Image 1 (tube, rainbow, N blue to C red):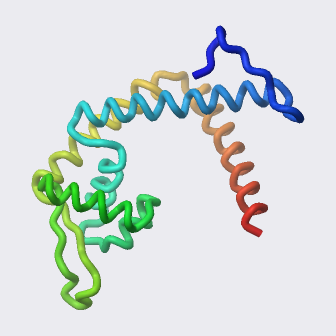
Image 2 (image 1 turned 180 degrees about the vertical axis):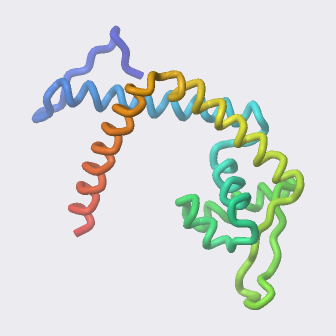
Length: 161
């Protein structure tokens, strides 16, 4: 991680301020990930599982394909995660009544309890980080991140054309 003792010079063609903002964003993303992992682990889960549990709690009985789309993960990744979750007693899988090629996923009571605990932990996490900022700062951060997101989307569209 960069800090005041490790100055970095912007790459060729990039102004220093833009590069400093980029570094600050990357450092924040890394710290966010570390804190989120520790918070979720402290409650018996992990962020990937939390996303799956949230999706299943929201749409009980969805298919594995639908779940993969909801959590933005590749189907093989979701399959491996579900195997671990099933082994831990968090979910149960069953064939669709009308189409045996489709597997439906449901939370067990243990899965619902963990989903609840992780939702509470996530709420505490957001409150202690973003929620501790002033309303004006949160609005400005949301506005700036929206602009950055739009710029990133536009860059992706150009690359996909």
